[in-house]
Image (spheres, rainbow, N blue to C red):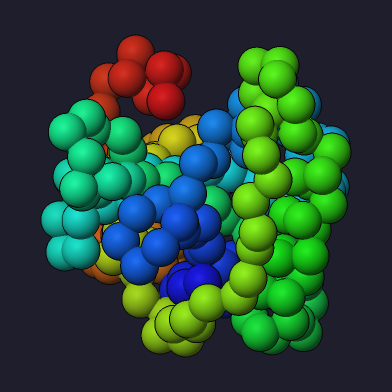
Length: 185
């Protein structure tokens, strides 16, 4: 888990081992088909593409040893008021165990076998979100999280741009796009 600048969310990823990301399709499927229930069970509010460190335009491969490219995904989890990252990590691990038990089977969007979840390394540096997440995924999250604001409204909040993109200039650069591109995020 990674602490994200702003302190309201943590970012987590599910790993098979030290270098390969775990199978996440059931989580992705349920977030798309039943987002409220999935968020209630798992606490996950958004799924993002993980970027290659210091390359926020890139997408990291989930299995660098494989011949096919599958994007590595990270999941945003909100912190409750006064909650520590350690407590959030334990709670998320417990919730994912429940989610998995409810989503095992042969149907589409189900786990074929139940993975085990355990807590891993905590990174408590509050770096800008684009340290870990692809810029396009951040824009999609901003569109959803600040749905009552236009893209142009978001660009007027320097603190938001710095939290997500590391600087006002980078934030404005990333959010400067056509209305068509914004609508399909």
